[in-house]
Image 1 (tube, chains in turn green, cyan):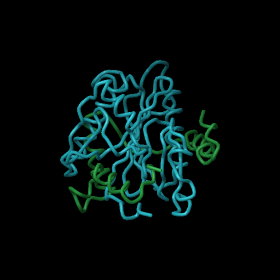
Image 2: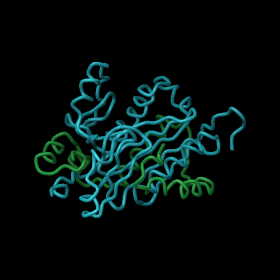
Image 3: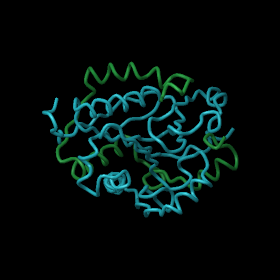
Image 4: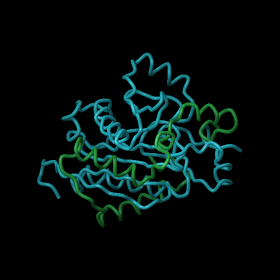
Length: 77
Length: 202
C-alpha cells in the first residue's frame, strides 16, 4: 500500500519529498499563497481580482460532490 | 458571461476555506465545467484539506493503491481526482488549481499539455522562490525515461519528479496533474509545508 506508506516506505518517501518548511520554517499557508498570487498575477495572469464561486458553480459542485464521495468509482466515468 | 468565441482575460483568484476531499474535487470540476462553457473566468484557486485526504489519480485503482480501512481508522478520507497521476496524501499543504481555456496559456510555451505545464511551473517556481524556497524546474524527460520510470513507479506521486516538475534540494516539492475537457484545462498541485512522516507511521 505505497500510497499510505509505513516504516521503510515512509522513510523512502521522506527522502524524495521536499517541503517548504525545510527552507522557510515559519512559512504559513497564507504567506505561501500570497507569494504565489503575487508572482502568478505578473507572469501568467494579465489581470486578476479576488472572486468567489458563482451560484451556478456552487450548485454544480453540490451535485458533483456525491460522485466524489461514492465508493463506486465507476461513477467517475 | 463572454461573447461568443471571446476568451475572458481577467482572472479570478479564489481562496477557499479548508474542505474535505470530495468537496475540493467537486469544486475544481465545477469550475472546469463553467470555464469550458464560457460562464466563468480563468481561475486560480488556493485551498487546503480538512480532514487529511489521500487522493488517487483518475487511472489508479483504489483497491490496489490505498488501504481504505487504515485510512478510516486514522480519520482520513479517500478521493479520486479528475486528473491523472499518482497518490498524494493531502495533509499540511497548500493546493493550487488553475482552470482556464488552454488557448489562454498557450501563448507562453505552447498549447500542449507539457508546454502549459512548463508555463505554470515557471510561475510556481518564481512564487516559491519569492517565499524563500530555492526551487528548480526538473528537465524534460525523454519518452524512454518516462516509460522506464512508469514501470518502476510506486503508487505515490512524490517519489519522483516528472518533466518540468518542481524540486528543491534535489527532491520534488510540488506534485501536479493536468486534465483537459472541451478546450479548457484543469491543473492542480500539492505543495507540502511540513513533512508528516511521523504521522504516516503505523
